[in-house]
Image (cartoon, rainbow, N blue to C red):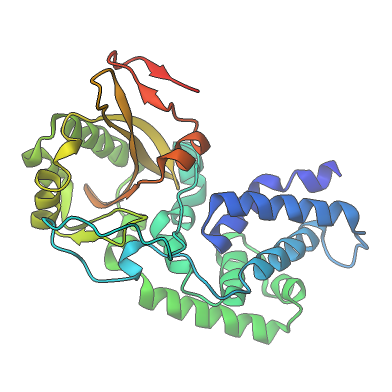
Length: 317
């Protein structure tokens, strides 16, 4: 039983990539462990392969409805920055952030846990998605994947080829560049400069930090913007209430992220507004995804539900 439980961490990462939701991934891992404990390992494959077979079946069952998770740019074209968003897009299942550790975890997982990468994975049919993650991220052999999925080696290799081709077509130049260029130190320095500039609401400094084709998206709204003029128009127009916000640093999907707190209506502190996840290419920020579901995400990330006037003080409940 302890040998099976030791897989919990890596299984959570696998199920998150498969499902696009950290909460659903945790549920899937728990179901996997329960099935494994109730089952009987007969030794016809390695223990790890056997456990991943169970996890894959759990995920495929969860994906059987055919609905896939998405980010706003998967649903529509960009909006003008001065345009307020419509009502939240409740009909969409959004790709969600995961609290994937700090620099050490980011270095170990590389691009494979980045928000953009997880979003692109959702475009793959579930069995192709499983094949690609098992082979290219987790290092299973073609024979192990064939055994795990109940297919032939030729079929597993064919699925991997199709998945890689789809992935290459779907990934944006910005997402792939962010994985190739810029080290952790550069990202951290950029993130620190970004937080300071956002707190000052310094549009000139923010413009210097953002890539010319940077995107800003706001799930659960389908509203998103591309390019410096529209992002600036958004921040100085519909989002002007963000002036005076405080940003609390955290990590999400292996990238620097920030909990944004806006000034409260009674002037007694700062209230949760968004979880901002950043992505990078070289020495520029290429994407800001501001998740507005703070009631669910802030507890998941261990973030306080309010900041006091003293910037060092926070309130947890």
